[in-house]
Image: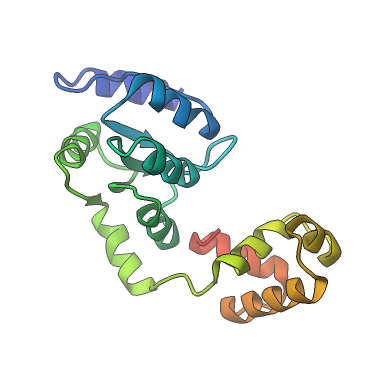
Amino acid sequence: MMRGALALLLGMEPDITVVAQVAAGDAIVDAALLHRPDVALLDIELPGISGLDAAAQLHDETPDCRVLILTTIGRPGYLHRAMEAGAAGFLVKDGPVEELAAAIRRVLTGETVIDPALAAASLSAGPNPLTARECEVLQASADGVTVADVADRLHLSESTVRNHLSAAIGKTGTRNRMEAVREARQQGWL
């Protein structure tokens, strides 16, 4: 419903044409390859793959398509990940549609557009302290599986998994891996 309403509102702008809408992250790249949009407006939380993963794929497979993340989840970690994925902008869904339309126009001209409050929070939060492997191990253990299961999933030894979990727990200042997962998600690192 929100996607349809947003498309309708943006379609009312005289210089914006909505060429496609998709309901799942894993349909984004195919739709972009078919319709060749100038700007892709993505949310982070999507069925299939996340908007952040889709942004990285779009950046690789359709480099002329600029990505603008529009989400309710305004976390500094997500902003960092979006920029690393090649996004040209990151906005939180609490502004008027006129501001979104203006941001789309700015992104189209090559500017980077970031929600000012989130930019300030991101600067004070600093970078993600977790390595890519620590994030991968935390993500794989998020559903409470055993260390052996995580090791099997990621093709690592159990001691390596324990080392990465221990490092992630220390870096997040938590007491156990489930708290570390929760904190990493809260910060937008996962």
